[in-house]
Length: 103
Image (cartoon, rainbow, N blue to C red; front, side, top):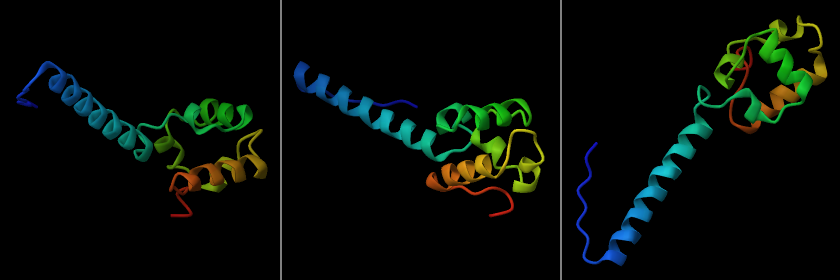
């Protein structure tokens, strides 16, 4: 991607560069917040128990990995009961996502 920018003054150039930086930064934040492949399970603010089960038993790294499972699959794991499931469902719903069997 090539961007041509013309600056009238040094102050103008600094402001335009800051504006461009902010636009790019906001675009990256939006993409990260809405793309399940870019949301790490550590960023979901789940309890340690739920995070550990997802990471260790199901080898989940991102939210996209979690979305592949049905609730019945998750409930089969030791240390992942209804409380963990409800926590996960609420977290996913708050971000606009559902488990496979809810979609």
